Amino acid sequence: MSKTLKRSLISAGAALLLSGVATGVMAQDAAVPELSKEAYESSKTLYFQRCAGCHGVLRKGATGKSLLPEETRKLGQERLERIITLGTEGGMNNFDDVLTEQEIKDMATYIQLEAPKPPEMSLALMKERRKIYVEEKDYPTAPLHDRNWENFFIVIERDAGKVAIVDGDKHEIIAHLDTGYAVHVIKGTEHAEMEGAAKDPGRFWYTMGRDGKLTKIDLWQTPDKMRVAEVQVAYDARDVAVSNDGKYIIGGAYWPPHFVIVDAESMEPKKVVSTRGVNVNGDYVEESRVAAVYTVPDENSMLVSLKELGQMWQVDLNDIDNLRIEQMDTSRFLHDGFFDPTGRYFQIAANASNQMVVVDAKTRKHEATIDVGKLPHPGPGANWIDPKCGPVGGTTHLGEGTVTVWGNDPAGHPDQAWKVCYTVETDGPGLFIRTHPKSKYVWADQTKHPEPEVQQSIQVISKETGEIVKTMQLTDKEGYAVVHSEFNADGTEVWVSIWNRSTSLEPNGEIVVFDAETLEEKTRIKGFFAPTGKFNVYNRVHHVT
Image (cartoon, rainbow, N blue to C red):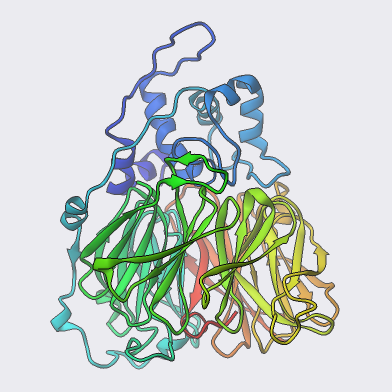
């Protein structure tokens, strides 16, 4: 399928994000470059798809550098084209295998122009965007299939705007479900030890697309009816989580800067909370984006990370009409994180500060700050037992080839708590680190390295020695990268994605399944559309990291 056709399929949310603003560019003086209206519109779409996540809708920077005209014009057209083409050692991908030479040239010009400001989104408009595919009265009371749904994997098929449901026992794809554009995160109802906890944890899952579309999935349905409802709550978004009682979901947005409380059963939006505010440095921030939303284990609250503000908000969901929110000052730019094994401490990356921030979900206070490597990015993270430091957590980094490991057991190992235990030098910057309590190993990718052979490899680290015991290049196909590891329910297998970074919408990716003990390849599951992250039902529902 052609790039032009692919981009014509961008979702309604993304299209609206890109509309409602001035189009076409006229030079005001000789120093300002010009673009045709067609090139401007095409570059604006590509910027949303490929650049806004790191550099911001308003181009003020976050994980990526500021791309405001006063910065980009200093670099000049030729230098900008080179950066976009080749990437940087600081963690930016090369785009020569994604964009054409002309698209790179136009993008280099586009980011020297003033950034267009997208429109706002009202609660009324969100309600209009709600769609019901299966009525609640028609939900089954038991699974309508005989598969082991607790060992299903839900796989993001990024550029196709789909997720795949995969039988983890049989290694076969059950369904490809239409969702929002470029789904970033999938969360399910979790197991909770609390009064009023949701029934059948893991049955319902919610995806969040880059276009702000929330999709509800019912794993008890037959494949043709697993997508039961959807609603759009933003034009650009990243994360979602479900309350422990199963009543509400929170959808966190990049634009407009807000989060939305949605009825988890009916998918009706109930409340919008703006996240614009004053950051930890005392500066007002308009584009204050919600990077992560996480359910606090065993209580009815959620943690919401405010990327640009450098704040963690703990949102109590017991009374949404009189919403209680604790705001914890931490560090910028908050991105993604994970709980320690006790479920009390949330460990989250502050990219711009090169830190991991720890908040105490019980006291609702900032607990600790850990200095780590450049641009930490743990994804869903990893916890394990180190022979020297006891319980530890770890992160990969976007800006350097290291894994940083720190102690995270203040009760049992106070001398090691929130201190770096050791670091591991890897072949390149990565996005994700994962393990399992039954495994002897930690798995880390190098997806952010510009060299293909490094992008295409996964590395395995021994928990006992802290050393890399195996490096495996899983493909040598041009334009492909290896990303994201996930264990199956019993910890005997590790699944790793081979992702095609091109814009093709044909099935072009696969998942490699490894024996978690021997590290030998068992099989490959083919037929995916650019698979990236994957989520095992049992492990995610029971907080297995």
